[in-house]
Length: 273
Image 1 (cartoon, rainbow, N blue to C red):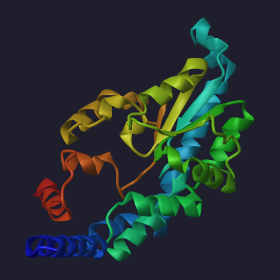
Image 2: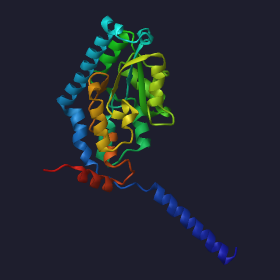
Image 3: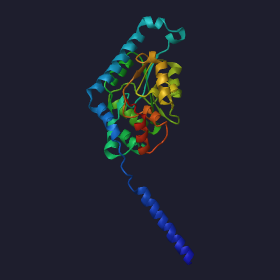
Image 4: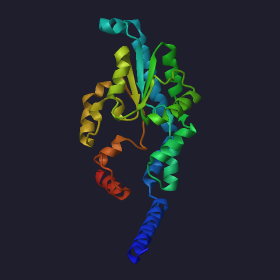
């Protein structure tokens, strides 16, 4: 071997070793303490449970009103014979993933797909208070439930198992509609509407209700919320979620930023006296 080839081989071996070491080295912990109060509120505040029960109690009142024969007479003829449906999100709407958020805070690990998949595979998410009772009541009245979620398709079996294990009755591969390619939910909501009259949408994120909120600024989200204000508590039922969501992404202007820059954006967004 010539000296040149020897030193080239040595250099390649050294470069490979450095690369492997860099990839296997643990990532430094990130300070996610700003999320602690939101997670504790969901896990420990009776006020959170009250809000969840309130949302589903209101949803039942609205469904009962729609089931009234007098309401049917007000519908267009084409809608009168259509079976009813309710479209619901999954995460933080009917399943509680706060333990996964707590794990991230405790270990300084921001959202990561590998950890998210691992949590889903555990099938340990509990039901949001009031969700099982309401959706099973709707099913007993002949209403079809469509679970439209941005969980990835690879999580489908674990999601089905988890939903069934906490007591939801109308759960199948057909009506649990996860994300295949696009994160927007309009196409999947359209499937629900193709053969059913959607009487209600339930979610924790405004994107769960209409695409009008997708990737909009904080100001535009406020404006759109005001524009459809008559729908809140009627056709749109919102669950509280201060842990995460596009409300936070809007503060970051939908940019993928390091945690230090996110902290700066949050601080700058605060409204002071």
